[in-house]
Image 1 (cartoon, rainbow, N blue to C red):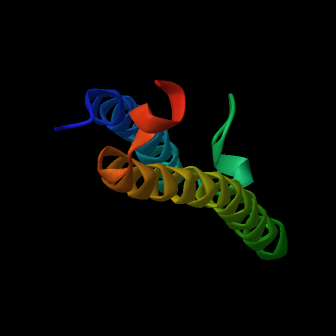
Image 2: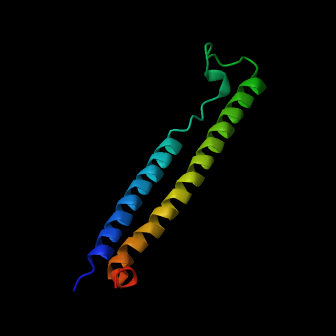
Length: 105
């Protein structure tokens, strides 16, 4: 006899895992779009400064800001992916457990 409660519970957990994987994918997509352009190229007057040190500083600053943003998003995406993997494992095992015996006489 199949345990329908366990099958439906496994399906529900699998759907939650799928949704969480979508959140992780969205975070990784946002991470790939992090802006690493020089700080002087943003805003109303996107002109490169004449002084080389200032121009280089704007490049480094823009790169560091963009990489910091991407790293933060990657960290969140990795955590969401880990949660999705754990839930996928639970969804795989859950239908094979005798759950109805725990709740029904």
